[in-house]
Length: 418
Image 1 (tube, helix red, strand yellow):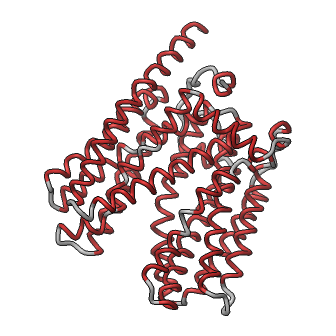
Image 2: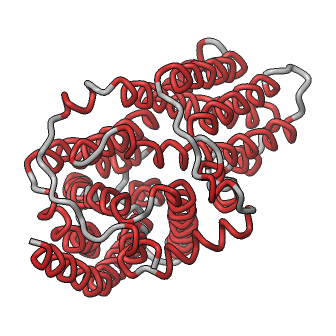
Image 3: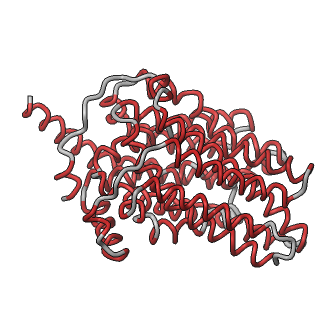
């Protein structure tokens, strides 16, 4: 298989420190670019949702507008993510940022109809997919070994914080200045992000063999790589378990309502799943050895899901928050899965692989949230969360078997090489 031929074993890495990561100028540029674009995205999405509701008074249309921040990712991930393997990745990131800045600028036009604004945000989200695929693909070239693990942890933590901060900033900006100035601020973040990437990172040539392939052939090759290699397939599917242990965030409002809480309680439920991960990630990435993280990956995935079964006992809000925080803390296994994914996928296929894997994550999360929301209509939200947690734990046990075999095979290979 492509992955096995390209990577013979997981590397033994020396531990690194966060200071070593931020000492890399290219990483600082990519990190600041992410801060600006992610926060700007959330700010604009909140502003657009409020603007649509203000113009139409329709909760359905405002929900459709908000969904524009997620659904088109699937199309972009399938069709456009491979662009980062066919063209220089810096060029792809800068181009995507400038396209998004232009589209957001069009949304500011006062005469722009609501349908046109919603359509533009769907296109903007689709363009985000190749940007993210290219950024994730180039990051291992900027920081290598254990520094990549820390860099990925910083990016994940930044993503969580930027989503919250962007949403809060969006609400405040709309309240103080109005929705259109908030959209203007988003356009400015894309321009700033493009400048950071263009002048803060160096150009790396695209793979000439990949550049000559069409989209359909490249998509097929990427799918065969992800599904045909047992290690890559297992890593990807283990990552997809987030669809089940993130269910509490998707039905936070009805869960809080059953406990007698309101929007504040729902917000705490959503935040609790992120809080534990933010606090423990530095320890997990700097104090735990690389091979230990790999061995712990499957058990941690199982625990992230299994702890949610405790909601079947209908705990109060405080204990529920603790349960969700513990679940989110175990969810940092995603860092180990992501670093192993990078080790296993050859660089020439990296953008396509990241794009397809991310598309799978969006699809599984969307399907799981829809089913959980439907189930919560006829049964207690606590029961829904407990059932999803149990299913996730069973799936993690099933994935642990092939992953253990992969680790054993790599250990035998490394022993034979030494």
